Image (cartoon, rainbow, N blue to C red; front, top):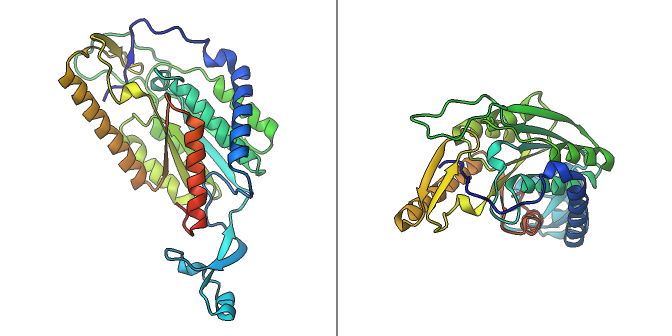
Length: 333
């Protein structure tokens, strides 16, 4: 399915995010702090709480609990099976892989997709630094090789591997704010990005076990990024945040609509008044999203979808709360 953005006259939008990054980040920090601290109060060990290694309290065994965590001394004293709860380590390192390729510079909802990427990065950073952990990021965007909008005959030419930037992992709110300012100020370059190479940056050099969060629309072919993601999951807890715009799922009935792939410049004119075409588009989009979900599931990554036309923070809060609930039931997912 093409990564297409309408080239018809768009609704006027505010100034680019890079030009108003300070104001945006200030609002994001206030919004994230109020909602996440208000809804996720208590002893919270992270965005993806795992079983950890530090001993905690014991509780009665429930079906589905890992038998390797049986607390045999308490079981013997009470004659009731108990398991030992563990607390996730707080001295962890979290890495963000942020896809800011040209396909993210698009949105028909309340937000642009790139704005949702920055917002998700702000929320994850808040959850990380308040526990005293370190957070770093790798950022990928296009190659900078622009392609004029035209009707390609055959396969569009490749535009290069993209530009990749690494921000070292540091602890502290001041350093975290600096990281977010860099992310928000990143200029999206035209041309193709390489999501697989971006994820591979988290695999090299090898790091101690931690949390890796990949934020992208995952519209690149799954064979490009699925293997690096599986490799990343061997060593780290992985969260994949998929950013979606409603126009990528279905087309409106607006007559002839010129659309262009922002990464290749490939131009198409689509007759959206045809109900059969709109249905084929919706079916192809559903199949594409199912393929992405299957690839993420096969890689062992937790999967969170954020949309540009919904309250992304509420969706993230629900996801984190579900992770906590799963943990209290004795599972890690």
